[in-house]
Image (cartoon, rainbow, N blue to C red; front, side, top):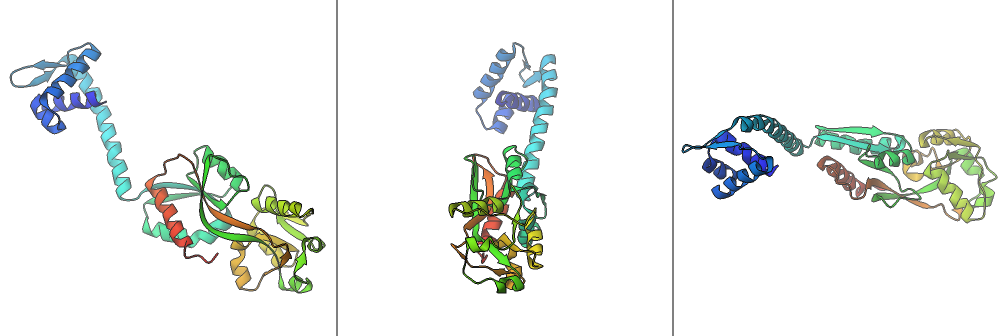
Length: 296
């Protein structure tokens, strides 16, 4: 490519001295490079004259094709530079529907700061999003830390939360607290369905305490689980991060258990050894800045 770039510059200038000045390399070096290219191709590309150089017929044919290639490369480089300087491009994010709602303000402030950046959001399960990330179809995932993070993934922590058993006021007042896990199982329990991290977490939590847990209802999303819990359908097992407003508005109440429910980290997952775009790095730094102000 370097030889073709030199060939192109000499052909444009029709003079080796002018070409050497433009390329910022010595005249003998330019002459040597042209000779090397001619030797490699087995043809004469330039006619040498006292006034300079002119293309041979085969040199003219090569020049027309090289011009197309170099023009294409220059255009792509210019587009990349414009995109970099104007912070444009696309960020492909995998995130749960609930987390989208929680982070909507942060995403909105990022969009206002970088209006030329397009954000594509995929709301599949964390397991499905990880597969898409590994297949190169997503740039990053925002989620709770999976129980079994594979070695090819990198986790950037945004904050901590906890899993909690919660109930509405009527059911909460009936429960003597703190309550053991065994006594808790006497009440109707509402869980997220497989293969959610929440479901895996509660199963693991009870197994560590030599107990089994059965649920009255398995629900796909945390928002629906919260809704069913608020109407008194049962005790919900939900990440505290997802129900801060409900707790603040006293629509839901945390049940104190013995032992206490497990903690959980949430953050950003990226592929190790994968070079992220400037737009993606700006987005990650934006979330990290806001996470420091969070109370979660």
